[in-house]
Structures are given as C-alpha cells and as structure tokens.
Image (tube, rainbow, N blue to C red):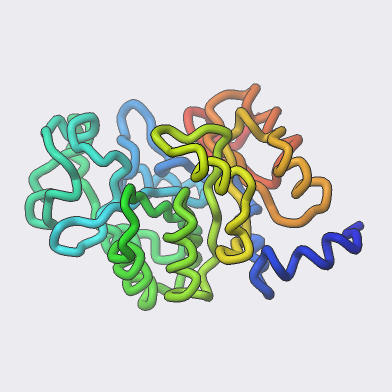
Length: 259
C-alpha cells in the first residue's frame, strides 16, 4: 500500500501519466537475442527477438554524417575487426563492415525501426561520452515518425533531460550502477544519490544486478515508488537474485522461456 511519503514523492520523481506495462511484461533481450552465431546488435539478433516475442535492448551512437547507428562500443575493433572509432565513420563507410566475422552488417537505427515495426518494444540506450545534444536530437527526430513502443535510457542524466524536452511522450529510464569508471567523485555521488531524478522524471530505473541492494534502490522498492529493471542477467543465479528485487530484467546467455 503506497504511503503518504510515496504519494508526496511520486509526482516529483515520475512523470505524471507514465505507465507503460510493456516495459515490465516480458524480459528484455540485451542487444537482441544473440549467441555464438548471431552477433549482438544485429538485424539477425533482432529478428530472433521478434520471433520469441521479446523486447529488444539496443545501443546507439552518432555517425559523422549525423546518422544514428546501432552499435555498442566506441571502438570498432572488437565487433568488426577494423581499427578506429565508430564516431569517425559515416553511413557509407559502415556498409562495408560485418559483425564478428558473420555476414551481418552494422545496422542504422532507421533499418531497425523498419524491421521491428512495433512487433516488439525497443529499449534504446543512448551511448555518449560527451553530451552535446546532437545524438539525442537525431534519435528523437527519427522516433517522430515511429508509432511503435520505444523507451529511451542512458547513464547520462543530461541526455534524458534533453529527451524529456524533445520527446516527452517517450518513456525514459535512467541507468545506474554502484561504480562508474573514470568519473570524478562528485559525479558518482550525484548519480548514486539520484539527485537529478526530479529533472529526468523517468518511468523506471535500470540498475546493475550485482548491487540491487543499494540503499537508495531499497528505499524506492520499499515505497513502491518507481519500477526497477536489473541489468545484465547472465546466469540462473543472477535471475533468481534479480527477480526477488525488481520488476523486470535485461538478459543474455539464457534460454527463454526461463525455467
């Protein structure tokens, strides 16, 4: 039963009217339903997710010609065998790249939206090291012409605040963790204290599985203030741990449906 404190805090933290059951109904396939033969963030992985009826989590970067590409790493080498940065490429250059030695191309976000066509939800993670608003603008502009279910998530609160202004109708999720590499103490403190939640006004928090007992999250959970989604679940033990502490999971390396 929500407490008086919940009723007071909820309008401050969560956007009024934000209720998206499709974010919580089925587990979310991390970078699509990929395996040893089908690479992550590929059209093949997304096709398999559609066949399984699973929401798709994917990552986006901005190319130098302002096209939005679906790709996780900043560097190309792990996924394509090519040295260089994804941000230094344009949409013509990436047509020659293939993912992890397969025939799978590196897809643009527009390709993925055409493929998915709201057959399953998409959870789109904005990847940026230096926020300048260009990636956020390009993502939101693409989504204007997409009538399907899409949530936008990021570790960067500034990206989410930008998207709140540019695409207020899209649900937002703030990604958090117990530790952050290469961040000064004051930024880690701001993120882990959730001080910017009133400006982001997310519809969920996505937190790393290993630290779901983080004090702030335990408070949110006790107050039933905002849904919590755990990332990234890679084992049965992680799944059991997360399912007792959150409303949904982002997973890989597990066979769906779960036992």
